[in-house]
Figure 1 (cartoon, rainbow, N blue to C red):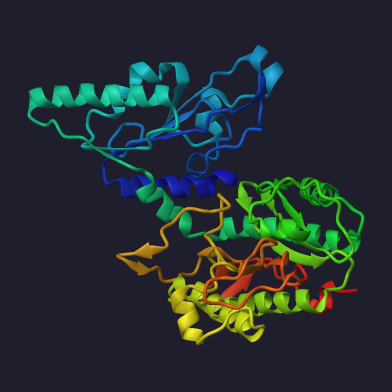
Figure 2 (figure 1 turned 60 degrees about the horizontal axis):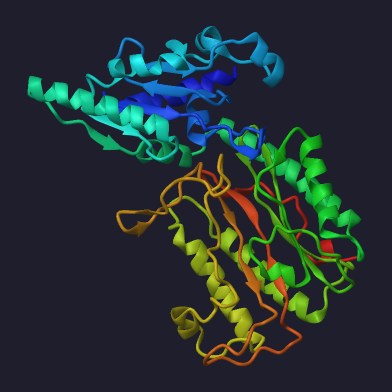
Length: 434
């Protein structure tokens, strides 16, 4: 049953609160224009603990309280549900969503004090809802004033992310199953592009094909699709997707599906006409070699920073071999001479958020990988069309300019090594050339 794993998470969260109170708010509905709203997407922290995909809801966790897990949410309202869809309601929150007690959201102002009075610390994220912030801070202040009269006036304020985001970083089997499904949908979409792509198509036609695949399989897009042809591939977050693709272009596609709140994140770079030029192939192979070398390193207890360091070394060596960088390899790395070509990290945590939560360092040192960590590995080389000679480096010939390549896969750390969730999306030169 779906709520089983939410209940397990709630129990773990309650235990880590150590007798204190946490207030977690649902994401607000967001207006697209005038009276039209964007499709609703629940805040990942709230969804992680409750499974409830409705706005106007508050979850309160108070281990010391008669009702350790309380939901405040919208009441059932037939007229509103005719317009907007069915609501869970108070009864449904207790019966189907595991709440120890549920109340209408309208009762939060008069009941909130019940959950603050016996807690010396409050876990609450400021800044998401100004009205809720005022209510929480006001009730907290009242409680502290009462505490002064009784001799206990302290109630520290903490960020719930300090507990929740560490929990979310470590993916369990149920989460990995959903990420595997998101990856499978995404891989199928990238394969469909490979069969369809040809000169004369518009970037938005490829975007439409990708997102059709996502929706057909029961998912949706995880983030705005990047479909960047020609020199657009040198714009890291290009999403205009309006250009007509030409014979001889490369097409960089960074697009993937979300399935049941879990995301994939894939990038592939393809020749529009089915064949790389010699220079395109040379850059592509460097990026591929860097990615494969970095992925091969992944195993438990590896410092996360080693993934980037490995990719940087391969890219520096490759650019040096092509005479696009000059100098001693160690010196090039130390000086960051590669950064005009490779200006981002080699990956990020992946999960309910595409750029998922969790610290990359612990006690000033790179975090050691553990089974259940999931992240991207995505090196790239981008030679901007307006690239000029880099100080101390060779000038960049015009025939190199405008080439942009990135290759990205989704990696799960296992007990013995790793699993590449997106390995099915072709990336070897022999597999993407016709």
